[in-house]
Image (cartoon, rainbow, N blue to C red; front, side):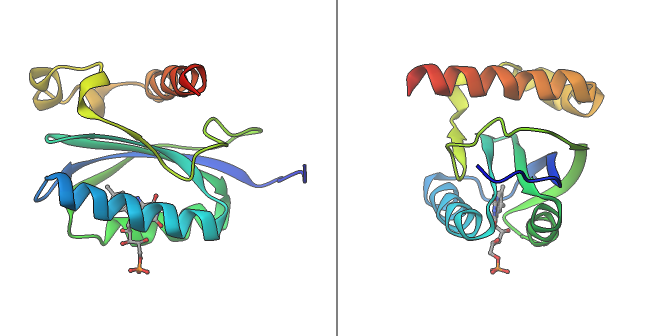
Length: 139
Ligand SMILES: Cc1cc2nc3c(=O)[nH]c(=O)nc-3n(C[C@H](O)[C@H](O)[C@H](O)COP(=O)(O)O)c2cc1C
């Protein structure tokens, strides 16, 4: 296993624009294709009122990916919540894990009320850590 010294984790929240099955499917195809090429892994929590995405990988690749994502018109109001160096990956086995609406932890009212923007970076990271444990347990 090569040591990647510049591994970072970036998490953002955004508002979906034109949220439906085919749109989501196309986003995931784009994400997985590019991430496999760029050495990026992560998870995308998807629901009609919010996307919450964790990207992890070499700093330069994650930053370039995030710049492309910000410009994507399939969502808006992209807001960075966490951006820090890490020593290991949380979603090393997934080019982009897709977490569907059903397993989400916050209510629609809480999202509308800005719970994600108010959450601390530690709370957001802990939510993804829980998701990663669940995904590993499910294989
Ligand atoms: C919610 C959302 C998540 C995305 N996740 C990724 C991702 O993880 N990796 C990625 O390369 N592109 C992702 N994309 C797609 C990028 O915005 C972009 O379409 C893709 O990287 C191809 O870029 P290009 O058309 O400039 O080559 C995502 C887009 C959206 C709307």
